[in-house]
Image 1: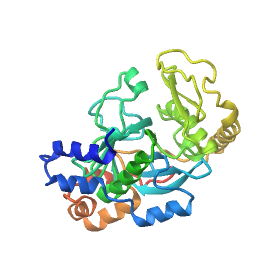
Image 2: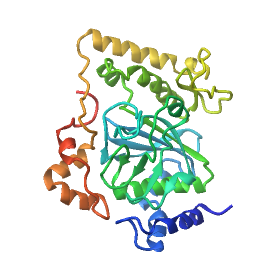
Image 3: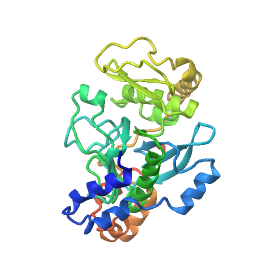
Image 4: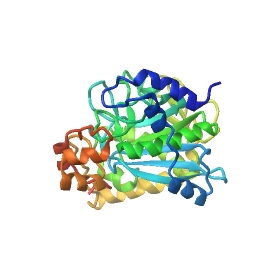
Length: 336
């Protein structure tokens, strides 16, 4: 079987004519094979990790952040690094149709073939939308990516520098033997405060389901197994077997057998949500006109303007998508 590096180089031949993307095969090979920065390797070492260990990615729209978690020598996963997100589009809520500009929410699995060294936005990996559940529900869309620059039409943009490091970390995990890594894409950090603030949103039931997967990862520090039934996700602890795979079939009670693992956490969170609502201290949900941007990037955009900021976020100065919209949107973080 050819190495990942050889596959990437072979794929590169098809991308030479992408406007503003690359100029030579060597350019493609170099950007796709950049090493993980020495500081990040040192950080791994300090946290009992190696570049070859498997990863999990978590994405949070409201906070405009992407996390990489890595398996430690103990076998549990720990947070390696949090990356500020430069741009995502749409509003909180899942993507349901092509052209809605929504960035996806849900659970996705990325293999080595979904890494794209020829991306029009420097480097990227495909989330694999629609997944099995989304396809069964009739959701449409394609080529939903995590990529560089600061432009989004349903994707997650992390600047060229940001995606280069994320790409390198993912590439080395594949080289180490990981077949697929899990991406968990959430509307916000699934805290009681944020759940209370968004309790009246029409997507709340969907988000409660996502929170089961979120809680399972928080409790076990292992990526949950993902199944589908009842037009929804269902989850099992790492190594669980026999999860349902038909999104349109009825669910058995707790098919993944995780209630005992997360019951105390969910009960405490539900009580806090009820308390926040009953006391009148539940915060208002953010109202997005068109996506968001991490506050650290927003400050630069406000100070330097869109054209100058574009030069800092992409090697080819890809324009910032709808800067006027992001500047009037909320500042990120938990709802306030």
